[in-house]
Length: 361
Image (cartoon, rainbow, N blue to C red; front, top):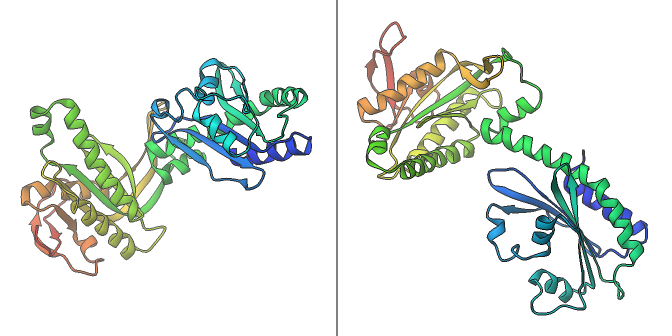
């Protein structure tokens, strides 16, 4: 299935070949995405393909959309035709902007699929007499053919958005690639980052739920941006905690360790009085893949290395350190961390030496 831009450009070429005096063609589609509410592509005769335009959420409240022909098409599910030579001040700004650029006629068509409008097709001409009835009739026949192609593209965007938003970009790609069978597990060496927000129980007791959720989201943003900036991936948010990995497969052990340490330092540098958290780091082998029940799966990492990273992070509150790590992790860093002692960790046979950065707490 071609991307929306490829579909737009190919359709523009076919319409021009058929004799339609096309000056501008736009195909827009609604989508389901945490950041984007609509995507559109534009072709113009003089410039050819243009960049893909994305509209963030809140589009309906913007003056550029409210009362526009696109809003009208979305609401009525009916075509809109406007002679641009007969505009009044009451007409929407979108019409006036096109007329100022030399356009003479506007035709907007809904692209219905099933029980909803999956997109909108907008054709504009600068021909002195506008579109002929033959042109309009032809495009009315084209729209139902284009609609299912746009719908398929919309569903593709939706599946990728859901996978990458809830699973992460790398893991989401694996799931979309077919790794969806329970028990499909790979062995993976990775640097592991476990983080936990401090004072979460107190915050839930003292603050309204809306404020605690806002604090948690700000904390997750801090950690996520630091992890992504250093080639890592958050696998899951666990209540007020974070589990992230920095795979060795795409680099070497030392670089993966340095990436994880750099991400931890970058995140901790953005702490605020309201957002305090600890981070535990370790490097080791994990099991990475699908686990769960027959009908409810989770793509995650398992193994003693993950448990050790979590145990190390739990020591942050006990020791007053914001960042702690294992000896395996410390030995791979260029700036050797300092030992803060050996501790008995649950599940391990003897005391484990724990390290912290040499810089102040």
